[in-house]
Image 1 (tube, rainbow, N blue to C red):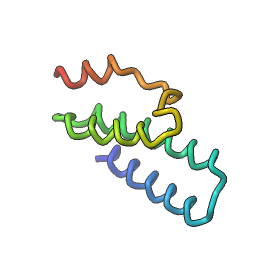
Image 2 (cartoon, rainbow, N blue to C red):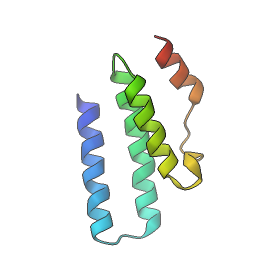
Image 3 (cartoon, helix red, strand yellow):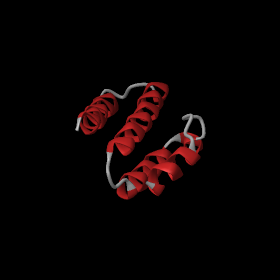
Image 4 (spheres, one colour):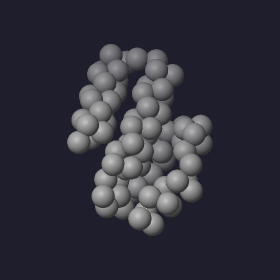
Length: 82
C-alpha cells in the first residue's frame, strides 16, 4: 500500500509543478520517477495486469516513449508470469 501512496504523492507533485508552469525538464524528471514508483507498485501487486497497462500509458506519455527510464521489459514479463 505504501507503493500506491508514493504514486499518488508523485502525481500530486506533478500537478503542482504543472500549475506553477515548472520547466519541462523538471516535469520530465518527475514523470520518470512516477514510472519507477509505478514499477515498484507493480512488483507489490498480486495481480499486476492492470498495473502493467497503466505503467505502459505512463511510459508512452514520456518524451521518447520512456526509452530512458531504465525499464526492463523482461522483468515485467517475469512479474506477469507469476
